[in-house]
Length: 148
Image 1: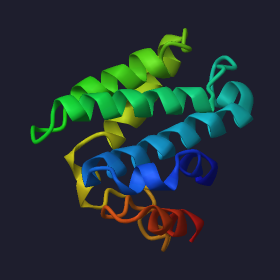
Image 2: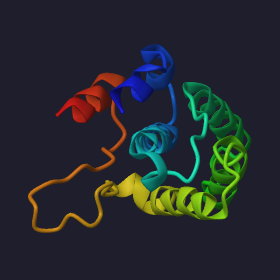
Image 3: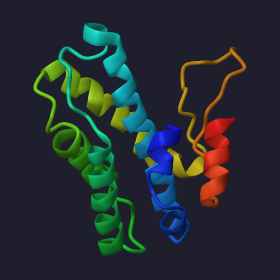
């Protein structure tokens, strides 16, 4: 997660709209999850997909273009889920079950709750463990949140 977040220049992120920052944080979490599942071989993905930081970078570029063209309007989560899940990351995926899993992750992340401290570990009740999307803040605060 830290590697994904620090890929982006601090100056660029600090100047972004708070909604873009939150979506990017969730996108970095999604990317980290996609990469991490590869470690588990066939229990993670049915195939070894070549996900890379380029997928995250390109998704961020698309996110920026989309948000610039929809300034002030409702965030087009359905469109973003389709673009990330079927084109950017989904373009690598050839197995139907893997595609369903990828889209399930995105459906859980890309929604209005994202702007209201969405819990990224949703089924961990009673374990005193939590990882939420922070309210929009400067780049360094996000990094501190990831590290703690």
